[in-house]
Image 1 (cartoon, rainbow, N blue to C red):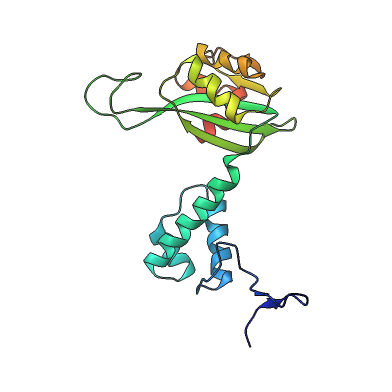
Image 2 (image 1 turned 90 degrees about the vertical axis):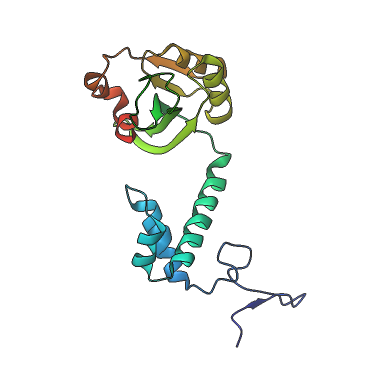
Length: 196
């Protein structure tokens, strides 16, 4: 009556979900798979409240499921490095507030957006967003050594710190583009600018 597998030698019993995030769950696997689909296929983030509505569970269950799935995705990608042709750009997160604008503003956090592309059409494959303490060569070199494969081709704008990817064994191709809207339209940064 129990849905378990049993070893014919040692007679140890185990369930199909043992050792996975689905172990001991009371939520049907079909709802888990639907949650995985919704979290990975939507362009915008899915809130726990929206997930609750979409899969028909309580808010607490949806919140726990979302965070478990996000943790698994993080752990899966943690050791992987980007390779091939890579677009990289600098950005800040933080809304407009009174005070010093632009670089160095106290309320803005600097980060880099990185997109791995492949093929002649440079289709995006994987992406990374990483916070940095600032846009300095040492920061970019540290990131490149831990997250980029040696021999990758890194395409960036003319920001001087991106030259540091060369110290990590990557080939750097800078494109000095105009600032503002015209710089965003540069075809070499299509996917990283779509992300930002």
